[in-house]
Image (cartoon, rainbow, N blue to C red):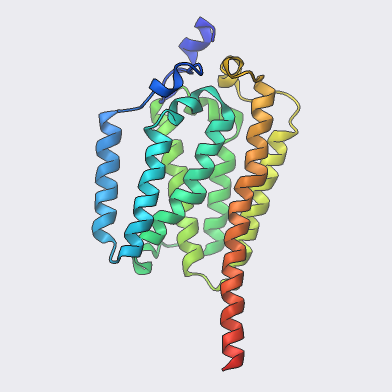
Length: 248
């Protein structure tokens, strides 16, 4: 990475690592660790059964991987790693946090349609090149990105949880389409769009465009598949319920 670029882009997780440096790049930011411990301790107290606490433990383990492990530093190097981070945060950590709490504690204001739109708009916004670049040049903007991505995703999954099965299926399918569309646009952009990664991918034997295309494919297929899988799960439960109702 050039000296000019190094001065310009100082992401929260530190400068872009080389493959040889990666395993040593743990993030032991005391404010992060104290904040995460406090949040998960509070949710643990609010959880009322072992199943909820199992979901919470899963969410905590994944959050440690995303923010504390060397994967955090990898997101400074590769846009594809950053996209993976955001997908796991919104499609796995968020629903696990919702599942960790009793349903009545996740009754947030706003309809399912509103939360579906807000979550999609937030995800698209932070992957616009200008907003993304801002997040990698300021810790404040970085944490604004992380908090809003997670917060709107929690709102979405909480709304899915309390909705009727047909409405939940429709919202999950809408999220699948919107995630896939953004991924397709990024994949077929044809030119590198994300300036913070112009100088960080070569050490990983990738061009900025190849890294961007991989990121788009991750968003297009695996991440969209998570929402589609959730829709199929809800549909399966709904059909079983209907079969039981008809049989009775």
